[in-house]
Length: 122
Image 1: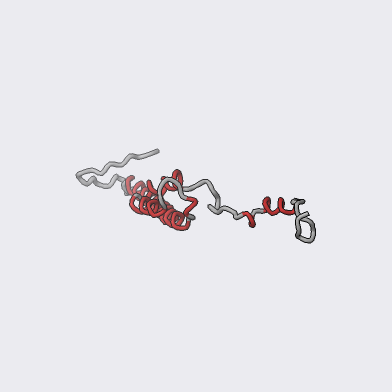
Image 2 (image 1 turned 90 degrees about the horizontal axis):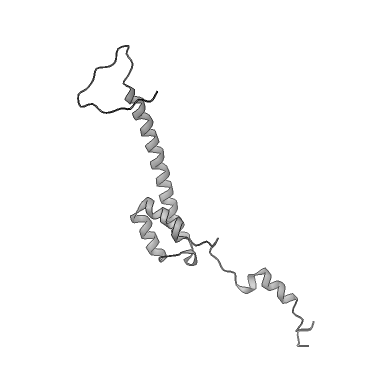
């Protein structure tokens, strides 16, 4: 059975039978719940700041990178949620391959029949 607790303005005597007030257990559980929520919010906040700082310049949308850092620092949870919803680019790694690192481009070089085996035009 759920007991809703309200803080009385006048202290009430203990109930007969020696049982403690029902609010004490409720307060302890609420304290633990808020402690866990606060810890998770702090971890999310720190992770977001690190994520913005380590994200490549090309992987940032909407605002410059320094502006995103300021948004996340000034508005802790709202800024972090905005960063993940709006600021991050869809690119994984945020890196663009140069042509000589792209396997598809390198494969097309081997199929080029313009040059013969000794390197001169044929």
